[in-house]
Length: 336
View 1: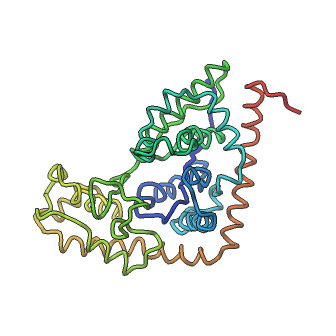
View 2 (view 1 turned 30 degrees about the vertical axis):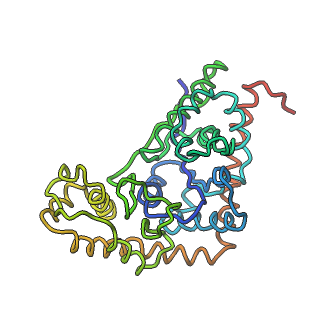
View 3 (view 1 turned 135 degrees about the vertical axis):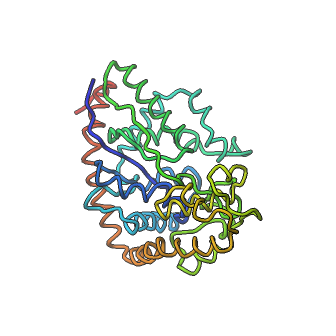
């Protein structure tokens, strides 16, 4: 059995503002991982254009996501940060994976159904096959682990299926079967207005989410306006069953304070949400305020961000090139 180097890959789409959900569900976890794994973090702009993007807005959002990563503690000296479109090997391997993956596998992908909705026939073909591109993103670096939220586990299973089928089809032990890394109390942060819906950059209500571009006053205001119910905070985590808004706020408090939901319930059990939300607002501002301010400063330094992405893409291409060359050889492409 081939021994694969311990390497992680993960990415964020530059399609709107980064939110608290992106921070708690992904970026904060990456900060810790970069010390223990060879880490590759990507702004996935190829994925972003599966739905139409204004070109100028896309460029701005790409820099903004990179700035958000760095402001949160991702260190370009410790890991690779780049935007996907600067490494053509992603798209080339994705085409090969288009020819490995089966239609039935893609038909089972729930996120396409959710994103395409009633307009399925008008959705781009890119939106349909983007799970194959996601698999290529991971496998072009032979990543062994991917930090994911619960809603991304299906895509990771597809990546494993594609890697295994490629290996079986060509009689090789080439691609690793990637493993998920799932973290913490708030891997899935919900809307501040509807605890049954994921916090989303596309939600029309600004009060549904905390953006990493929000200032301290906006962060505090949104937390204090967050929807709750009329029942007191339970003494135990079990008491949150059937209370999605309450669970969401307790989850966020636990994640931001590096505590468990049980510990937060034990502290605030029996109390109403007014005082709790004041404490959560203060906690959110103390953790996120410095990040949002540093992110704003970095966004004003376009040349610095562009240089980081340029250097990162060069490192990424260097890692990807021999993998793609080996794939060409395995598949049977004639090489000069």
